[in-house]
Length: 596
Image (cartoon, rainbow, N blue to C red):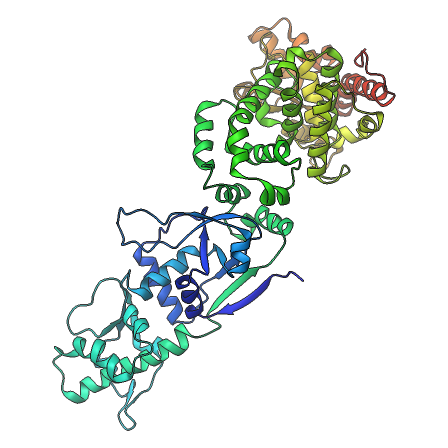
């Protein structure tokens, strides 16, 4: 049975794993960046038996580009450790593990023990060491533990008359006899001290005691390091990385893919190039693009399949064209007013079925789609958002939905209409009570109907008859400002409780929103009419699907907020009905004129 275990390891265990190439770093691990001062503090914690954090290691069950630890001299311009591809068989047969978290600490410890970074153990001043509180002259033994007689740690060699030892000397001489350790590392330090023989012998005893304790209590102590061993299948491994940030582990699924295909395809470099070359590309789309490349290469979108089956050659074959086409369809969605800002689409993964549709059209051109095909794609777009199809709830796993929709839209582009079962699964449900209580600006139903509104009529500014510029600073405006409702009806009123209802919100530009502040609708709308002036403000309000605009401007609704909400819903409801009618036609196998 595959399990995850919390184990304890000694520092010696970790060092041996590194020396024998049994512990390596995934390519996505950042370079060793710790300043020497952090290594000093780390050893101070170790010698004081303080918790220094867990190491997270794993034996991957998929191919992964890995590299060795960075043992270059500080400041060296020599090449960094070069990654190489390791297969799942390499990890399993050779018992090799990857270090997922703890690289900075592990590298710092190794470098200090091996002498690449020299860290000095500073003893307390000699008078203190020679005192009877610290040394028993009857038995010729130290009376205190090393965490009492050690003053601290430094990367700079101490001045004269300060007793010290080097971490690397303690480590390299662990198996030395006491006499050899003393001869090689202790005597040279105290030889110039102005002390008599007996006093020097006390320092020697402290050094020999530390030498012994360093081996048993620091290096070989099995419970000094806590190691979390991830021993899990691919699906759980992916889930672990999805949630890694909440656990303080700064990794992403893209990091893993980057390392997996590193030898054949430099994904990080390609991402940087795409950001510069394409208007609609950003790093948040990488996961979506990876899913799509795996879909067209291997027929799956699950992260298990991506880790198992996706290769560098698939990126070589499909990355450039996928990036280009994805940029185009996002531009097309905005140009055709299917939404007002593609960056705010509720689910990025919804772009994949549209991409599949586009890439399978004759000559790969939207103009080559017939009206029946385009109508169905449009209904799928609004219906999927309205029904939270990509929200991972009623429709099940998002991976299942993505694959099904990509397959369906591929066939639609080739001329095969989806069956009635497919369309019946998209529910168009709505009610006044539901919408009255929805208050999240990014609620999928609200976004769907807002997009559908926009596709039919652009929102118009309140101050003039120009279209609201959705690509500039745009904000959600409360038709009845919250503080107005609070003052007018009271903090505990039903009106104030529904202030954030989406039926009380329209999209206007930021500066306008600030100007309207907390005034009654009749007041700020009347000010617009007289100060702008906008003689067609009624048309502006109607573009936002606000009904009874004359009553709103005159002040009729100033004291009837609930009436206003119902009036607004009554203006929006026909759009739902239009979607409902299209849904009914498709579910009955009628693909002609679904919007009629």
